[in-house]
Amino acid sequence: MSKKQILVRADDLGYSRGVNYGIADALKGGIIKSVGVMVNMPETKAGLELVKDDHPCLGLHTNICVGKPLTDPALIPSLVQENGEFKPSKAYRTAKEDFVDLDEVMLEIEAQYQRFVELTGQKPVYFEGHAVASDNFFKGLEAVARKHGCDYLGMSFSGPVSFRNSKMDMIMDSMAADYDPKASLHRIANEDHEENIPTLVCHPGYLDAYLLKTSSLLNPRTLEVDMALDQELKEELESRGIEFITYADVA
Image (cartoon, rainbow, N blue to C red; front, top):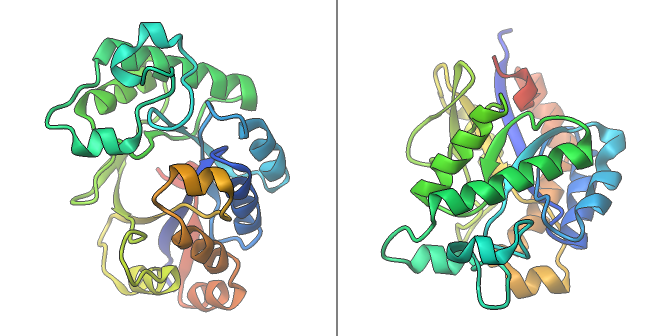
């Protein structure tokens, strides 16, 4: 039987304690094996400690819309509020033009790359961004990734993105009102993605006060933990020839 590869990833390690524990639990199920790390957050070290024994494939989930930057706020005025914290994702969604300064965002991306290496002792296996659709952010990510010989992963939910020598179909259904991550995984397993690798982008986590205050993505996180831990689901899909892979497995 030929194998169909599916990649299921968890974003936001470090966001909060609830997110950390949700991702740590989700990894135990064996469906999710790749984890994006937000390195600027107070809970990042604790999150990495929680997941270290599962040896996930770690990526840099570069964050410019929650918490404090690693760069001096005075050097990156286009990215920060008066209190020195990042402008929230809503500011990017509602902006009429791209207000991100390329030179400024590259300073912060570089700082986050260096922090990732400091915390993990390795380069990120994949290099991408959190929640912000900004051309200058994307340009900065690609430039810093190239500078350090890392594999950049673009963001697109309307067509495939390139990663190494492969094409990946990015799928994120979590904003749908009737979201069921188990149904999403079944649908992906049944779809014909031809030569592309389908990637289900998840944000598993448990709800805590900081998350409730700062994120619009709430209940779907808990559903994704449940999906990731469903051994019957995993065994059923594997019996049909599904192989759950990581970014390290992509050619």
